[in-house]
Length: 276
Image 1 (cartoon, rainbow, N blue to C red):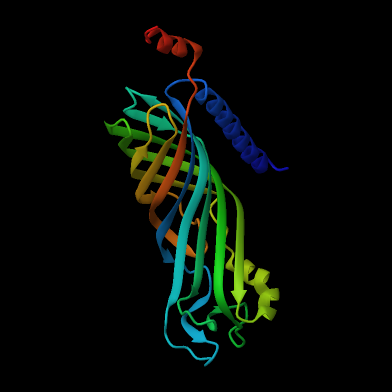
Image 2 (image 1 turned 120 degrees about the vertical axis):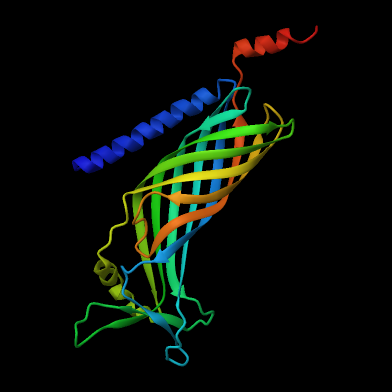
């Protein structure tokens, strides 16, 4: 194993052990809770020039180009575990944890026709250029990382809270998969060659600065449900996709939050306050 691989595994191991410690502690202390999150967002970005594609499309039924442009899509989805600690009578909360993120990007023909395609250029040369008819190019980049955010809860209610959140995250890429959907299945034998021609390695890191507004439903010391609208989020890193250059994204985040267990001294204080 090389030195770089060892350092990457050490970072992941330290992060995992820290998460376990924080999770256990959160279940034994008041003012701490453990959340399980899931979220997704749609990314705004620009088509980059790593892939040699033609901007003009074809249709298998007629086999001619009609000038429609390529459709490009990019999305971010994530799941995670998020211990959270509250301060100042629950008006400020800080959370961190471990998050798995997938960045998906794709190029396709915007037509709904089953025979729609675009052209992808192969190696070839000046006198003999190979073009492949492609329905879609899809790329997934998988990251594991640590988010850190702070919530401000100016309005607290018995059954729901409103809050604003600011945060940042840093993630390490551990997997990339790229797939080319050829119009002719027999061309799949050239997939790895075409991918190698791109000569692009996605960034090993992904990070962003984000903000959100949310509502938290549930009574005090009970299970709570958080629904957040992710505000336009700035992506700090570059080259997180070979297909598109991301700029920012927006989306939603949903978290189920479990209350921490009270300590023995806190339970005794609660009992002493009750009338016998």
